[in-house]
Amino acid sequence: MSTTLEPVVSPAMRRPLPAPPSPPPTSPPQLPRWLPFEWIVALRFLREGRLQTAFIVGGVAIGVAVIVFMSAMMSGVQASMIRRTLTGQSHIQLTSPKEFVRPLRDTSPLEREGAIVQAPLQRLKGIDQWQGIVQQVQAIPEVRVVSPAVSGSAVVVRGDASRVVLVTGMDPERYFRIVALPEKIVRGAARLTSADLLIGTELATDLGVGVGDKLRVTGSGRGATTLTITGIFDLGNKAANARSTFVALRTAQMLMGLPGGVTAIDVTVQDVYAADVIAQRIQRTMHVQADSWIGTNAQLFSALSAQSMSNTSIRFFVGLSVAFGIASVLVVSVMQKSREIGILRAMGVSRTQVLRVFLLQGGLLGLGGAVVGSILGLMALAAWQKLQRAADGSPMFEMVMSPALLGWTLALATLTGLLAAFMPALRAARLDPVVAINA
Picture 1 (cartoon, rainbow, N blue to C red):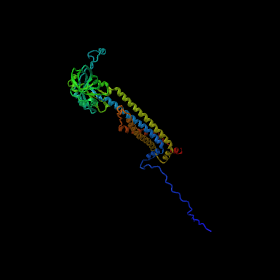
Picture 2: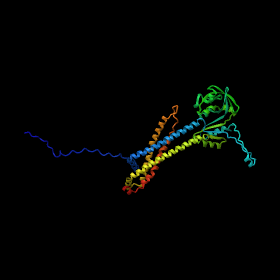
Picture 3: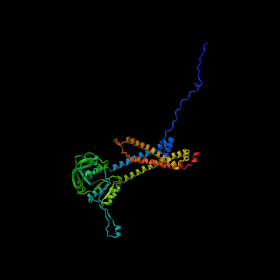
Picture 4: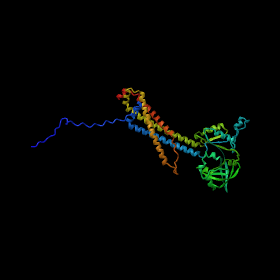
């Protein structure tokens, strides 16, 4: 008879094995303790409402991106239009005052009132003491370049063909700093001595001439000479290319019968938008007539002003929509966090601290959205410049993106967030602790 041995199990061995230790619960990342109390509460409220925070930051970012993109584009368009307008003219042009006729002083008032006054014919005349005027204008701090010139009509003859043109005589060293004529030369060179002549492409085609050919030029002052064509330019305007010619200053003085005189003084200034104010100041202090590019291009300046107004309107309405978005989110946050606000008030948190908590939320939402929006705007500008090209492959116009615009946008978005958060923050600060806890 066989026996089966069973293992002996002690009571201690029958005890259940202890369960493996559970991993410690994950706690949310703690905010730095050195932060002020208002910052800790504001950041915690924003972190708890991640979805709301993400949506409002995205809305602010889109609005800021639109502002950055539109501002840079408008600035680029305006800068391009002004550069193209001023590429062939000075900012301010000084000329001799126009002549006018007055009735005789010894006539009676009735006779003067009924007198017929005929406007005189404006003769081509030089500016009195123009050397002194050049020195005075050059001494103005806002002025960059001053260039005397002689302008008048003339007749150019090539065989049986003749054309009436506008002759401009100037000092190349000064004038080329105002009008970049060497950059517009398509054939030849911008060389001007007393026997040289620069003409436009249309005039060269009409007369059938090229570089090295000679033209007989007769000015309105009865002066005549034969000049050699050293360069042919293209000003980007068909009418200007058909009428404009350039010679040396002394050659023009001889052609117009103004030995030692000038008919105009071209001036460029540091700020093109201040040209009108500087022109008025020059006209008040000197015996000349000063015309700025703003006055001579009134329609263009009106168009630029309208563009600036439309850009400002877009910024205002985008900023208004951003402010309403931030305010609506913070109103909802106040309603959701009313119990927490009541507990904080019961623990001794002052109304001012509660007010600062929600103002900080508004400012952080505006600043965060502005940073993201600025990056999006810059990316959109880079993509637009890469995709939109002119026919020759060059950029349509240069985008003007200054650090000041980014700084202004960040500050404005943060201020908008603070203003939008004011009413919700005031409502939160006025909550009664007992009512808020029992809500």
